[in-house]
Length: 341
Ligand SMILES: [Zn+2]
Image (tube, rainbow, N blue to C red; front, side, top):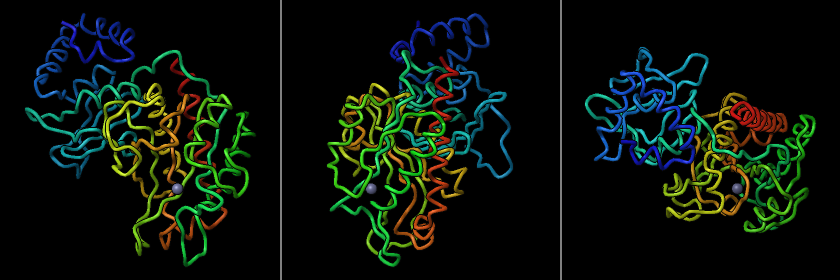
């Protein structure tokens, strides 16, 4: 009676072993049955599925809406969810889902795909063999004839900010013992479809593309930081304009679990390090991520077009903060992989 959604996952062997052990207790059997009760809708209970991953439901906090749940594990990473949101908060960081959080019989539900692609890799076990973490390709966005987004009032543009941040990041990562290569070291143009091949050629273990955001024309208020990973196979992109907006499968999808882990680790450190607005871990089929043969993310380190955030980005001390936070996220990711081996 093993349901299809469990056998289909990438971590199937270890997970099934874990599940069989759980099934030996009658309470787990009840949970298991409850989890399959929603099979027709394609959704599963959030609480029951998280219990399979070792979390338990916590008391709501004052001010939480009625249709919200908190889950946690001793010494582990807590999760908060609200009905009708298309994201969860994992340790306080927004993590976008493929489907909105639902409700059935008074309990929150999530889609099986979101459970498999987001919750299992974050809370349970990453697939093996795991990729390395030594050689990092940093990709400063834009360059040469392509300035990227701009702040006209400050006469500062994205290509200068990304290159400066990348150089700072390389210095920090070098000191931490990583082997770092930049896709560009000066103000030159590199086509989008040339960036991932540079990672492949250099046998990268992970790839981080650095960008700064821009609002619509005349928008000097939008602000906040977001980190993108490649949309998992079968899932829609958070940003419909972010590359191919279909649900295609790309070469980079072999690393879905690691892409998510890397994106979440970086977003968490960057929000903690800067205090910027958290715009969440998002998914897109960006050209620089699609064909990678290693885990990769694209960081939008704030709105250069914003009056206040743009002024911060134009400040070298703030770019140093961003570089330090991205380096901390990469270190955190490397340690997580080692601890899960
Ligand atoms: Zn950009």
